[in-house]
Image 1: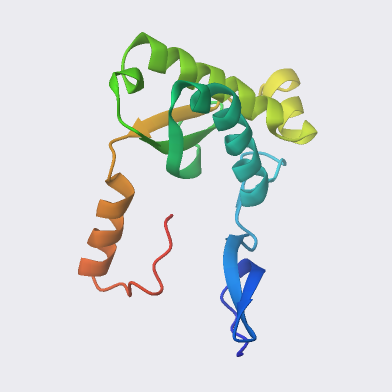
Image 2: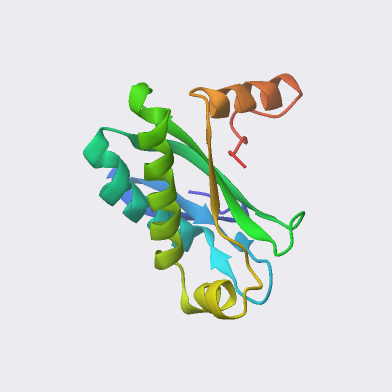
Length: 159
């Protein structure tokens, strides 16, 4: 077993012939921040999972991949989360999907820490969270593009 400084937090989930088998947890120091709040990748993953469990799974939808960033092009800035959903059905478009995504936005905001809520509700220094649903396969195509541009498949991590 070797030690590498990869900047990832890993969890040992099992052993194979005495060699640890890892599961990726999150990146170290990966945070969203618009003001003085700090939202870790792990906190965002928990919030997305909670929103998915309550609002999407009952409608046979799941978040297969997601990424996020702090959008500072608007005033006030806000978090944007890109979701890839599966399965693709008629439910992922139209009124029901819009309603479910809105409910997911509210659920995620409710799950984030007190610092985020204070800046979102009281200070109004953070705008409403936004979820954008991308087409199925978008994250795979992004990886294909990165690899075709010279990135190593073994080292590729979704944004």
